[in-house]
Length: 245
Image 1: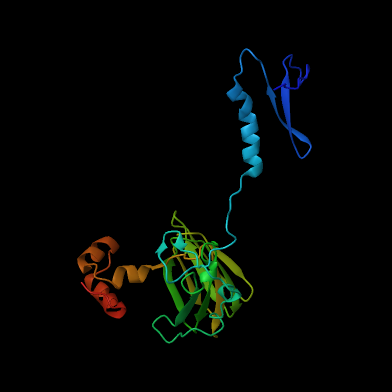
Image 2 (image 1 turned 120 degrees about the vertical axis):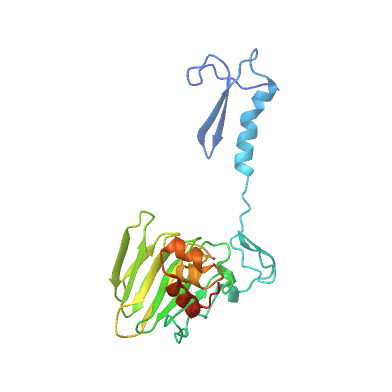
């Protein structure tokens, strides 16, 4: 096959190929018969064809199949999808705050709202009665953004350097809580508070510090040695939160 040659292609004295994408010079390959094999001649061609015809075949979404397996990456994809998979009405109702912490969190994670599966987002409703509190907790899998809709909420977090950042937030205020850091929310007003929190994961995870220490069977003597609390106080907290040991 004859190869078109240009005697002055960017100053080269050798023949060359010029490849164009959308009318613009993108790659030049110089051909020296005594030094370049036929295989090397086709490397640029292969590269460009691969670039032009490659496709990620990425799906637009992956609505979670709650009846299928679930792993670290989330649920497997549901085969038949309707518009209802992308709509969730579970955050419309006020949460039940008749409990120890006088607060309720209503989640719209992938387990409740399969439409967010695989999208890297989720949301929850936060209701706090007067005196209500969301105890110190962490989300291992996501950062969080809180927006106050009603009332006054004192919110804050503790950095890995043990520096505390907290502030009283009013209607319309927003606060961010970095992934994995301990944080809290307290109703600091005299009326019911409402907020919505969004997460950078469809399944942010949750670990509440008080429950981790006192709502299980971790032996009292171990907690006493690691927290510097006295045994009587530990047993009292275990009694309140349902722990043993």
